[in-house]
Image: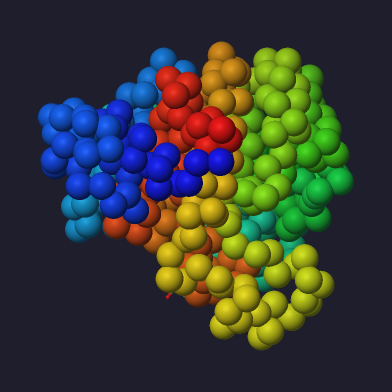
Length: 393
Ligand code: G3I
């Protein structure tokens, strides 16, 4: 197998630049004799590379887009043509009190997306998590119904014509495909999902409407998702797409299940999206049956092994995993409409704080300085097929 650095230089010789590569790119490479002009630093754009295939989205909140961090704003504009607010549109932020909404940050993000021609996916209208405090304390079905109806209608109609799509319902299923015993299921019964889509359609008839969840590539949860989609369809209620979140581990990428799921969902006539893509490289504390993660694992060096940087071997593994994924996505590009990364760069990722706070993770394509990683080039190279297959030589 070639070393990562020799592959990195090989890629640089194609006119790309890899962080971590020691070659001086402003001068001719001794090894190859490539002239300096051919090694100029030109980072290809993700969105342009895949423009004929699917949109490339990213999650961020307004602070990252507002120009306070100009480096990140530039990166967003260059590489992404879709956005999902990571937190801004969750009920606890949008609807902090029973009779009060706080639309300011979401309005600014929606305006930013419009100005920058980035279709915005509203995330999310109905989710059991990140609910406002008053809602979590609610015991009465009428109050829950009032919140549910008012929230969906008020939020979806405010952004009518401005938000491209909505994750109408998020994470309503258990791992076995049954319905999660959320506050909505408990008080509104099984029909709440159909009702949510009906209300969203009434309030925002031009927006695409999606169901979004994690692990729904896995057979049991996939079956539950398919049943949910069929239920909406047989009730005559519109659902346009399904979002497979895509929070996976580099050592456990379920490629076969992902492919089966793309085919199965597409066969139901809905669009398929990968909506929260990131690949963790860190150990999973639950594999060791450590029940009390908070106290035993936080601060543990074994659980946070890469604080000084990612070793080449793991960098290569991450790049290979992304290569395999995008090769699959391209194979089914006729069924996939969007691939969204959950965060702009490694420093922004929620995976630095979950399931253990304060770790150093590397799950995305850009590093903490917004430099493209080997995984970035592996993804780009899936379009030209001259990428890291070389690693296997
Ligand atoms: O902003 C506050 C900060 O002021 C405070 O000091 C700090 C202390 O805890 O918390 C900060 O808020 C955190 C927020 O992320 C912004 O970083 C919250 O604690 C934290 O709970 C929140 O986590 C978010 C998580 O959803 C829960 O809503 C993650 O950013 C976000 O990436 C994650 O996204 C979810 C999707 O919505 C649904 N699918 C799973 C995905 C990952 O959990």
